[in-house]
Image 1 (cartoon, rainbow, N blue to C red):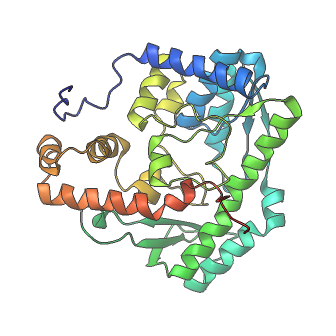
Image 2: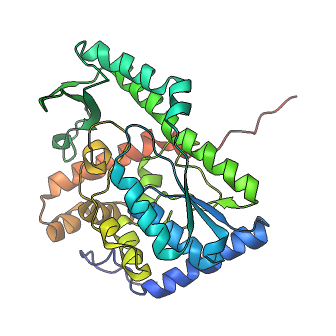
Length: 330
């Protein structure tokens, strides 16, 4: 029986990045060209690290002329996202197009439904001039306290204030905002079907396992080439593939709400380099005491962190479940 490696900060690192890239490329070709009988790939590109690595992998697997990169901005999107996405496409010789989805989202009532809930918490909120975001406070991550969501609004002078979000308002804001990811995925499938291509899903391991995705939105796709990679490992691939430095150096963001917000602030509550190592220890059954000693934390706090990880995985299981088909009719 093989001996498990002692836990260390470097245990998360890929030992042979080139081999991992080659294996992904080989599997992409087998899945898309042979299994699905499609001719190429469509990738939604946001200027973020995950979609950038996925597009680069697709370009190497099928050739840049068989990959379409699609930018899908809306009125709350950062202008930097399009700039970086265009730089990425140019670097790899991939054709990139822009599909503006603000009109579609307005038609669904995305902004109106969201702002209705925000105004119930902050009646003075004016969506024409104010900005908003929701997030989790980090203080509960190393304790047994369930996550508490806050709503932050920022007036035109830059003054911010926040309140704890009641459950109904939280659910309505999230449900309305999820129109964005589902609309983007609908557009990706339009182009994929028109070209007889596959849609490349871009979630990484943390997004999949912790539930940081929208069901039938950014959690969809035909192939998920980085779905088993930690964020640290995705960055290793990015360096190897030659992803533009502006993308590699960009702080991971949600790019969902009108106010700027990092993924750490909105969901993870830890920077990815720490999250990766704690999650690796958790899912591979390392004792909290061993992980704590390496990471410079107390055993008690890491035990609480592991309980929070387990709670998060259980409460988001619905997102990962396929439709239930095993109904019986007599």
